[in-house]
Length: 308
Ligand code: MG
Ligand code: MG
Ligand code: MG
Image (cartoon, rainbow, N blue to C red; front, side, top):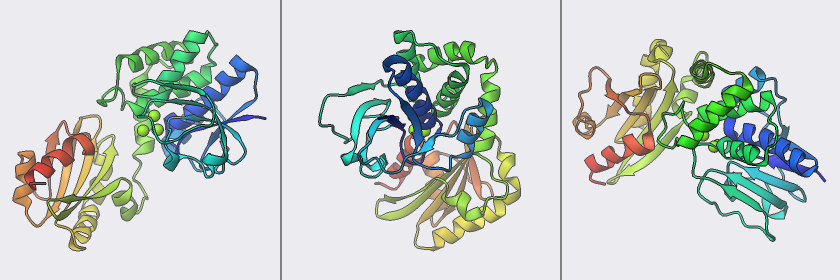
């Protein structure tokens, strides 16, 4: 029986590249048949670009794991697994997240490292086992590491990720990793023709801040120019959302290259938002240098300002 290698739901580039890389590894090291899978037939624009660029086939679709031999990559949470994961035979897990809630009936191969990307873990496995890495798979792994570490800028990036990329550059023949990252970023952040509502909710969360409802959305961009033509529409959508029972709605237009965020603000108390970030709203927004992460840099100062 084939081993189905599958990453988490809402597949990203790492979960897809890891599935491809680990399926190949299983074939080479055990001789067993292994098939790379994703939980969706529709992959995001960044992943689609990466597969095309390196000439890799789109993974098979696996949405129900019942009765199958499965290997999991880039997750170990039931909530992110295919349906009926409890009725599957899990044979291996390779990951770089906190350990989730998946359990197994027998001993399995379980390997995780606190690094920036599952493909970094897999690269180490290839190196240790002296398994030859095909050029196209190396390219996808390199792209996955750039994606997960935001071109090494994420606080999750480790020296091991940089070492893996240096090695993978040689195998894949990719010399310009910054160029590859920009191409991926442009694909991922494409906004042309996307309905405003979709942009608003692409990455949006509501928070309770001291009893007040505060919404925070984020768009990662290669340049703020990408949204220049739709700023007014975007601001109107944010204002409408605030009018629908919220104290504030903040929208992070994050320039990944300049490493900062233009923060659109619609609020009952703009002065409170200004105080939180020690800035001044000019028109409808304020530029905050260095702001990249909602979780680490936007939410905490707001919670403090709201006394939450
Ligand atoms: Mg992932
Ligand atoms: Mg990952
Ligand atoms: Mg990710």
